[in-house]
Length: 187
Image (cartoon, rainbow, N blue to C red; front, side):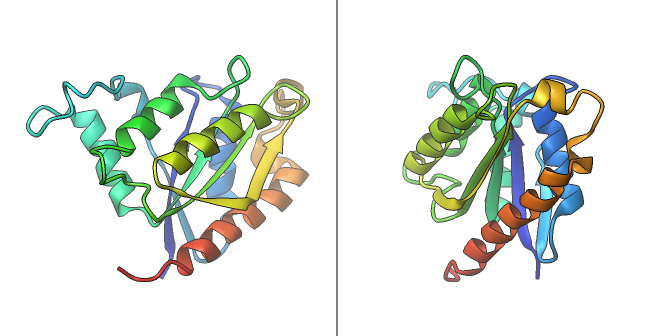
């Protein structure tokens, strides 16, 4: 049985290098991993407790929660905007952390990876993402990290799936997520 990993991409840009990195994860996923990139984060409204009530939850948020509920683990792709997590990824984490006490992340392994133009590859944003999703109940797979620097130049003409470092390192990250998910006791 494959471990179902839901990928959330924190960039909505059409040519997003983090989206391409998520596509590379799908392509390079090792045996035992089934990665699905969630489509539709742009449609999820900003979290507002006033609309997060039975019968009023927006369809896009319900779709996100259903996808997360079916996942065994998560792989979050975090670009870095102004040194921190993007609003779209933080919003997804906020929706999935609710309702209080029923977070979709609870007890599930989460890895955060990404690429950014700077020399650290978005490390600050990834750290903030880990903090937020950890508070939301996710089990952070600490040793499963990948920060790819210089994205604008590095991926100007090369898709991340064809990058030697990405092709070598990303499957290792995913394998650690799979191992963490397989170690979770059955409910």
